[in-house]
Length: 160
Image (cartoon, rainbow, N blue to C red; front, side):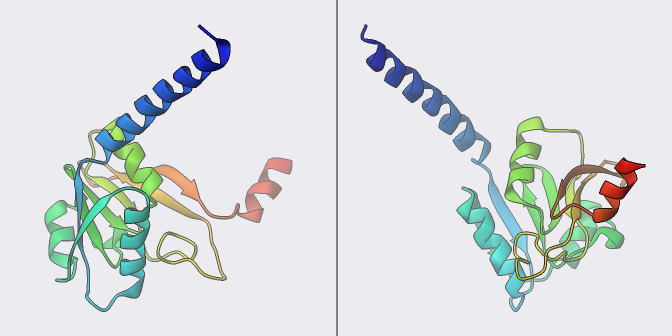
């Protein structure tokens, strides 16, 4: 077989596997519970759709679904989403939700407490570092990922 044809077929096969796996991971619909007047929630929904998710919005607030999902008020934000058995609280990046759905840890879900500047839906002139937290079944948390600009204090600590 001609080398260029073989290379092309190899690349097409790899792309088919990648996009097939991505489509499979994104098969679940994201149900978002939010206020009808929250603009940053709408921007987060746009972020999710732009990253391949199917999203339904429920403009009923999120307090009740957050509590039912076992997410403490301390981890709260302006919207709560449910996807494939997991709860997503706040401005969690789509890449982290994709990772969650791929790895499938035994957990309640993910949270970005508050509304950090620079997180999806909160883009603007300011950006701050923030953590995405994995919420375990007992309500405890561990850092799932870190985003935003590096904290300058981290560099100072490494120099010592």
